[in-house]
Amino acid sequence: MAELSGTRVLLGVAGGIAAYKSADLVRRLRDAGAEVRVVMTANAQRFVTPLTFQALSGHPVRTSLWDEAAEAAMGHIELARWAEAIVIAPASADVIAKLAHGGADDLLTTLCLASAARLALAPAMNQQMWAHPAVRANVATLAARGVEILGPASGSQACGEFGAGRMLESGEIVTRVLALLSPGRMAGLRVLVSAGPTYEDIDPVRFIGNRSSGRMGFAIAEAAARAGASVTLIAGPVSLPTPAGVVRVDVRSAQAMRDAVLAEIERSDVFVSAAAVADFRPAELSAHKIKKQDADRTLTLEPTHDILAEIGARANRPFLVGFAAETDAVERHARDKLVRKRLDLVAANRVGRAGTGFESEDNELTLYWPEGERPLGRRPKHELARELVEDIAARIASRSGARGAA
Image 1 (cartoon, rainbow, N blue to C red):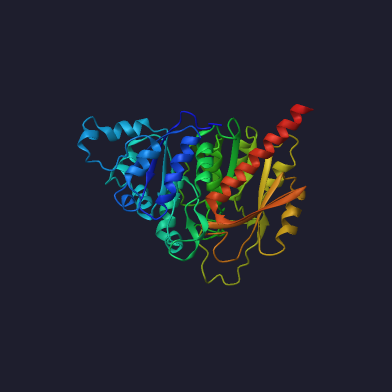
Image 2: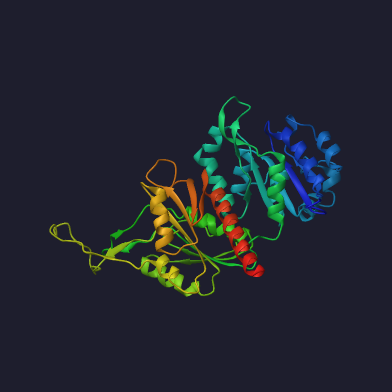
């Protein structure tokens, strides 16, 4: 079955040993019905010759902005307009850095800036390079702009090391490209996502807050938008760029978060409550900075509204997804929240461990619902978000199908 029949895919091949896998990727894309044209960087040609890709794609391979014959009529612009999707596989750390910072010093990066096509990157590099903060920051920047990050996978590497950094296999990349270009599974749905912490003011200087970075909620909003949903993101005080295609509402306190959610909930089909909303706030807000001399001052706290439980108690509630960030007895606490707040799904994770959860690029989630559970494992938050959105879409589709059959 030619799922990509007639689709115009521009394959960019960057320098790296994984470039040999890209030859098979061309074949698989063509088997799926796509028309494929290949652009190679200078370093990519050190691993595989352009002739290989020309034979497999059926088109001449472009390698340089300085090709006088091709550029006589601004060929790189013509190619940028031709592409419906640009897939860079392998995507090296160098190419990722150039794209993140708007670099355009060769044909491939220039095409990416000059094209309105969907862009997907399949990273491939040494596991230590993939873990480097600079690379992770560049990947996060691109993901926030709507670039699809395909992998990487974990396993043994050509350098002899083991870990994350292997390019995804060709079949998986083709599947992901198909999903990227197909109508989204959440098309027509209105999704509301809350993200980040809340700050509860004590005085004009101090507040009670928590360590939530907002990354998980922002990744969910982005994934839902990519899946075709109309997304509104209620964001606590975080310094993150707004995902492409998402309407953002900024709030500070738990009360402001509640007000914003209630303003949107009636027209929402799905509510994903990923925000770490404060459970308590100061009973009194001091109009002036509290001085250290007031050593005997007692800070009295009062509970905030439980936004998720309030929505769950409604007769006509949307599909509800909650998060349970726990330090112990994760499943017990998650299932308790599932029942108490009348949720459809809970995404639970253990916090307080290095490298996952709050303030981290990665997370480790397990999904719980009344009839079962599904561990998603430890992965980058944008990957977990995509899996969660896929799961939500499947459940909503199943529920709609069951109602239709009835």
